[in-house]
Length: 281
Image (cartoon, rainbow, N blue to C red):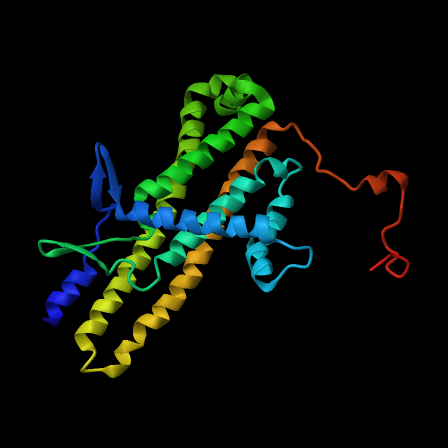
């Protein structure tokens, strides 16, 4: 009996598993996970916009903390950071919430049984390559768009061709593959880490079920890995967001022609900035 339960717990599909279909539209369990994460973020955004006060409450401060933290990082990237800060923050919050939702009790373990296999109702969104590839495609389109916006289509193609021009037959395919490799690396990195964490948690649950009455301490082993997955989920979210910021920053820096960052207007009047005693608190 324990062996059968262990096998059912450790069964994990590479892609999202179909729950039902609405005509040609197939709804998978990973789509349900992404939908729940979106609903939570929408509820948090509604609360902050409708219930926010000048002196934030603890809940408001907690919701604003990751936004302000990521915005502070992006603000130091380029002078055009306001044009893409919302995208970077959105990626970070979406991936973070989707990853942490996958650690809730019942996610991946409660579902419908089709034959000998269990199809969970909810599955972590990033454990499906379709989700991570979709985010990577958005990133790819945005940083290519920034490169074209800064220097025009002709200038962007010149960057792909490279210098000197007689090396174009060799350099153009290399630069093109380099651009497309970002699409692959972004999607596969996030998918691989989240999928590996899902397999690890399922394996530890299966071992706990098999050895619960032999080794009582095995009951607490999965909690250790759940704590690690909380940390890894946050790390993967910030890595994806910062890589998105880095790619956009590189596209701007490569085509911007030395655009200088913004500076404080007070510097034009020669105002000193080292008088803490006379400045207001």
